[in-house]
Amino acid sequence: METSRKPCSPQAVIDLIEYHNQPTVFGRFRKIDRHDFYLQQLPLSEVEFAILMSDFFITFDVCSKRYDETRYFPASPSALLVLAGRLGFSAGLPYRPLTVALLCEAASLGRWPEGND
Image (cartoon, rainbow, N blue to C red):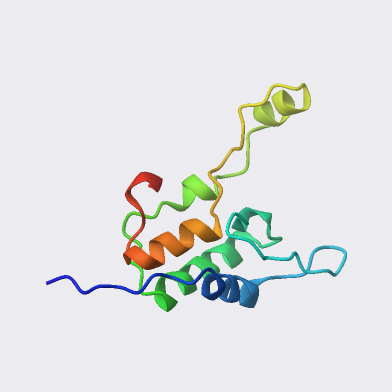
């Protein structure tokens, strides 16, 4: 029997992200105030992102089985891709934005959304 889950509050997700937020190189914190804000905008290291996501899965009781961090936090781009970008050739974002709205959807479902794996 499946239990019903409460819809996730965007503010609850924002509060968790704010807890992990780090200051930029200028000592200011990036404001997280909208549902389309995405985590890749934060000045966090790879380890800090992993800790934030682990905290998210635990706090909101979300099954992480279908979550693939390489879709959201890929390895550093190759020198060829960097050169192509500097020459004006763009293949779009090298990652999928991990938004507050997506995290809310996952929290409401209790699992990673099907279309985002």
